[in-house]
Length: 158
Length: 257
Image (tube, each protein chain N blue to C red):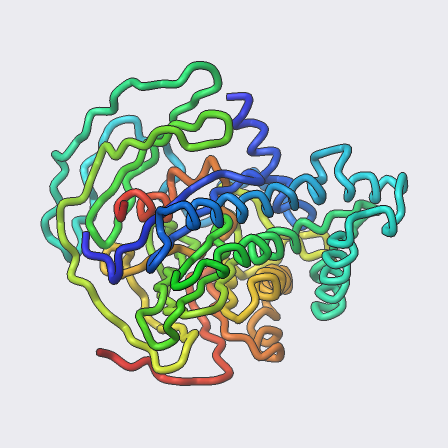
């Protein structure tokens, strides 16, 4: 836990100077701020259709001793379907990954070929319909990572 | 589970953020791949040791306190500070590495360090990579006509959704905005957060430049689109009300397969 606290400090370091904390909650609602302790039903089954929620893998309690800490993320929609990720971190490294909710649907891949790159496709896409390799977003902290689409992507495509 | 191309993925946490790597091609999980990944991470950790303002003994902290001079610092410090000063000039002071007497080039270091780390991955023969440092990333494909890396741009109002997808063969994508954990970027001219803007994504050849300019544009708030256009960037700006503006100075329509 100490370790996580020190990462957060590190995060502040990384983003520093130009960043500050704001305590206001009046901004746009962020969907994934809450830690979900149990697999939640997918709210959005997306285009893949087969949003099975029952593929719950049991996380074996293989905890390393000492500074291990486990965080469970909220359910994220990916192009494969809903994914939930639980990550155990020990000494700054991810030592265990569980996927309490795993997608079984096979999203229809959509190819967009570009003649000249980089090109921004001006489309609004839901994550589960997009065939993507990586996510670019505002500074993701180590703590926020488990809630992120990037973490779902990393795990879902392993 | 059908990806465009199967990619081997790695994740580690450095400088308080997740570093994600995807590799595809000749070296994805063999010794050269792991060696390159280790070297990339070492580059990021080295940058953290030199530039961390949370380490009292870092060169940047000692320089900030006036205990040492620039000449005493590793040469990278001068390089980073020069980048910061250029950004401050280019943004009319909205971006700054020195404010209220505090020296803090962190707004430069992240993209710069990741770009340095990526040089180790670029040395892998016959191998495509996409390296992300906390949502800012740089990609390379060996075959410039092959399948690109496909980068989703996160919706700042709903991190489980995307506002756009960018196919990138070789280049960088950096996004600055209201971080989802509540932190925000300040306009250094006023010391206050910019208004009306939710995120800025810059796409370009250099991650260092893309990261700096995404942050500077975000700090400029209402002037972001005009400024990005004047800089000749390809960029996407998402307003606080959810409206998106595409900045593309070299328009080329995407072609559907």
